[in-house]
Length: 343
Image 1: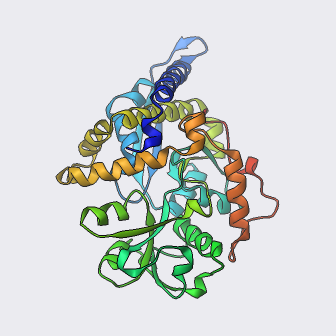
Image 2: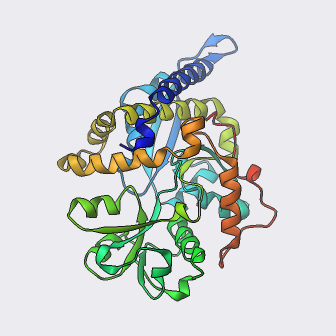
Image 3: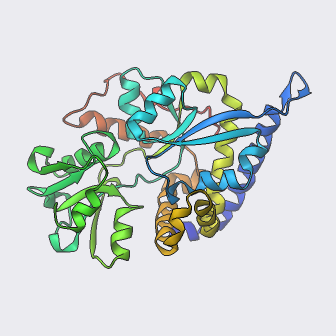
């Protein structure tokens, strides 16, 4: 666990109390209808990432521990790739989902009615990683390198462009190979490419556990972008605001508990995704890296889930400056984020 996390026990104690109070208040609001008790649960379809993972442990724990049920919610999880998830959220086919902040910006710019309401990753986890033997230790070293990427879309594509731009480079200065099935980590390991996009919480952790020396270029160090968080559709926020507020509070409560005791998140994940239980050490290492990414500087001061509007303003300008930007010049942070989830 990081020094930042370990140094703030008083913060998490107060946050747990705050989240519990918010959860109880939201649940009570859901249980009232013109002064009469209403025990019917509100159904929420929740979109998570492409593959079930320990990186979603907070959702699994909140469900297993009964926090969603106690708040009057009937939660169903669906796993989708990020571009598809944004569309489903906008249409109301998914009520709320964890999506990339960098996906929200071009979506809203294109008129897609979604909003970002709670931060899950206080520090954007996007990276470019390579084996130590390649000698890629800075963004400048990517000139002429072969780079693996899932595709020219989504947060990894935005992050790669931002990283290259910070060094005065563009994608044309590299040799990019796409791996639509997210096989770029294997490509790095087997020498098919020099480097690849990924997440600080995933590929470099697994490669290091297998004994590799791994170089990591964290995009947030040179080009801070809004990390993944809870995203809702504008119409859904209006029609299910109390349920979504309760869901957010329950999820943040689970994040705080996992931060204090990662084993709880690990146990909940193994119940939900039993095939992961065969590699407990690997999954714990991924979860610990995930917890570290939850806690950025802003979250350390304002609490998990809080949305840093100044960071969003910086991220918006970074995305506008990219060579292939489609972001509207008139787009503002207030067009992108909402206080409606109560985070």
